[in-house]
Length: 287
Image (cartoon, rainbow, N blue to C red; front, side):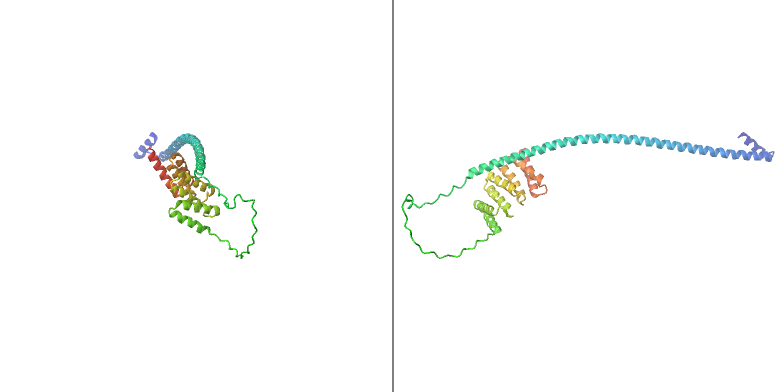
């Protein structure tokens, strides 16, 4: 650098030669080259620093991800534990429900037996006897010849319409003649047990008992519908009214079991909503 300065002084003073000028030019070129190399080295150093920073950032990100994965793994273990715990309680609850339902069935069967005992069977019709001929079997009757009766043509058997018979019974029910309506529905079931209206007839038999406040009888008849006509459109209603009947009898545990069963089996039905309201009402009164 000092050398360049001296050459510049010589140029200024007019004492410098052409050789001095060439030397100065060469030195300037060298300085430019050195400056370029320095800038290049500086750029490389900066790039290296950036790369190192990026590498460090990647390492930090990797460490963070590992931490998150570890946290997620712990959460998963916790959730798995809760799932196993919940599964245990769900299985236990299902077993308890099954036991309750079986108990209800036994109660209904017992009620059915009680109702049959209370109602009693119809006594067999006594054979009519002719008082004039009783005890005179040893007397010989004189044979009488009677004129042959005129033969009448046999009447064609009447074709019965199940729908009309059902409607007649239902009309009687709407008139609140419950016993008479019940007898008509029972006759309908005896004659048309597999008719499409059979399930409805069975339901109204249960309703006739319910209307008479014979809740035990109603429960038995509703249960007969659920057993014999499970696909009937009245099956859900029978289950609901069976729950109501148990409430009227003071057996809230049985009622609750039936109403909860209805909600689980038919969650989107209007009867399920009615069952929900009744359960909520029972809970409020129980407090």
